[in-house]
Image: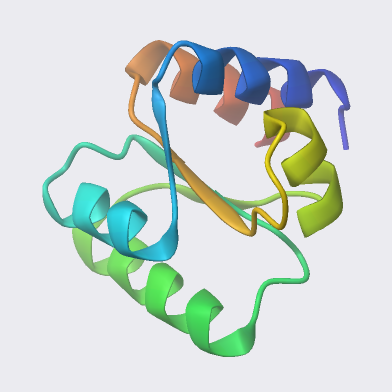
Length: 99
């Protein structure tokens, strides 16, 4: 995986262009605010299924990123397992790097 994508995630977080927390992510997917969803490889099975199903239904791109520790370090938060990017520019850049 390209480690530079972690810098983009950090920038998006500081610019307040991403959402953390399962409930807020699901809400952003349903309201079409989420342009891209990133989940950690070591996310729980139930949470993975819930987020994956919502992304498929609402046609939001979903990318599996590194583990939760790596995502948390990029954001300066602990135990981050998923995040939704709400800005089209950040989403396109991340898709190009990870897709």
